[in-house]
Length: 113
Image (tube, rainbow, N blue to C red; front, side, top):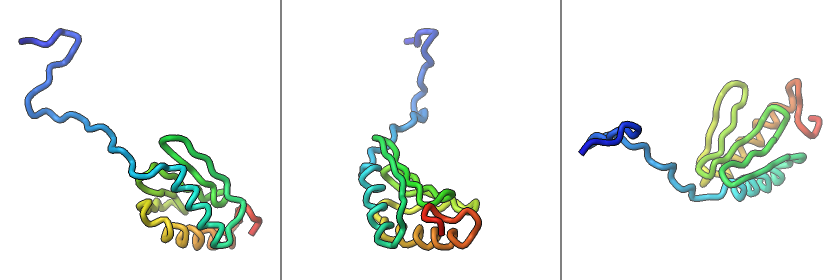
């Protein structure tokens, strides 16, 4: 049997892209928990937003964290860092340290230092 001309024929054993796996966590829930933890580390003026697929929190003017439900990701001074969502406590500690480091550099934090 031949495939219609407008539809490619698949070969046996050909790679078919897998659907994106379902995320075990809702991104908004993860970011909300992260914001609570960051506030516990003394960081204020955290701005966050979420939709079904992604969530984001602005920790400082140049430190933003994204969540896709599987990991938390940020880029700081050109280095990408990621944590699994199961390590939200550790990511909050690391991000608080980065924010404090950044507060001693030009640009400061949302809190002004």
